[in-house]
Amino acid sequence: MKFRQVLNWIMVLILMTTGLMGCQAKPAQPEGNARIPVAATTGIVADVVRQIGGESIELVQIIPNGTDPHSFSPSPQDLSQISQVKVVFVNGAGLEESLLKVIANAVPDAKLVEVSKSNNLIEGHEDEDSHGTGEEEHAFDPHTWTDPNNVIQWVDVIVEELSQINPSHQETYQVNGEAYKKQLIDLDRWIQNQVSQIPAENRKLVTDHLAWGYFAQRYGFEQIGAIVAGFSTLAEPSAQEIAALEDQIRAQNIRAIFVGNQTNPALAKRIADDTGAKVVVLYVGTLSNAEGPAPTYLEYIRYNVNAIVNALK
Image 1 (cartoon, rainbow, N blue to C red):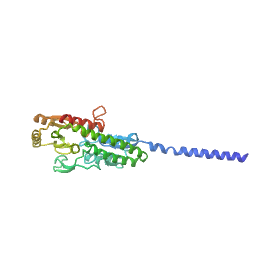
Image 2 (image 1 turned 180 degrees about the vertical axis):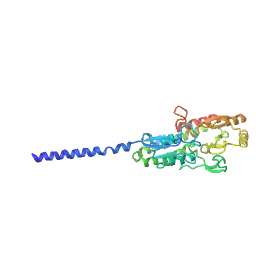
Image 3 (image 1 turned 120 degrees about the horizontal axis):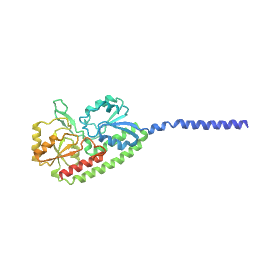
Image 4 (image 1 turned 30 degrees about the vertical axis):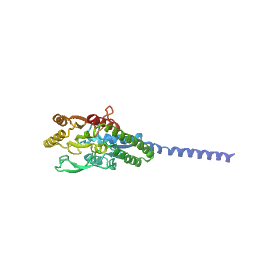
């Protein structure tokens, strides 16, 4: 009898030990489900990251919507919000040139990832005064997102980076990435269909700065001129440059001047008054707020394409 009692107690102890071991293993599970802190510079980059990361990430957008990314300077409060992030997704190609140094100093352990690093960049020269150097600088066009096919390449970069920092959600990132790519492919087809309404001779873009090169290259437009003849909004055009642009607008019968919503339109309106063109406002480096017409990247593209087509068809 005593032997059986001892055996029963041994079995109880074994079961209790097994149960305790199971209980001790469970705390590791919430770590796999914890939301990973990440950051993105612009609203456009942030929206694409959000489509892929979903509920598994805690996303901080550094540059507020409605703000020109070329000139944004973060406050100490902005930087405090990214102090714990593991990765910062940036557009790259020179868009956030001065901001990147600040971010690197604020979060030295975070990885900076350029989503446009796989894109085939358009080369050019910045206007000689855009950085205050007094010299013309070699530059790349950073506005890669104006062609959704470039954003398809962003998706692969984001999936890879999120999978590295949160491998337990790798399959989710891959599924989300493929689903979003399909939406981008559909968007590209939609743009081609909409642009077909514009006669070939009217597919000419005059803008506030050279921001639509990738869009023009993909969809058969010619970016013939800009108020600021560079990839940044920071330069000031001379009177001679304005006069030359007005002559070009008249000579080529340009119907619209496209201006970013974060840009002061006063100069564009003056040029429009002088030439008979009209000013059309687009979203360029920023999304709208949630209540506006362009709160996501997909809606941003649709809004801009509709505005361009309606102005030129």
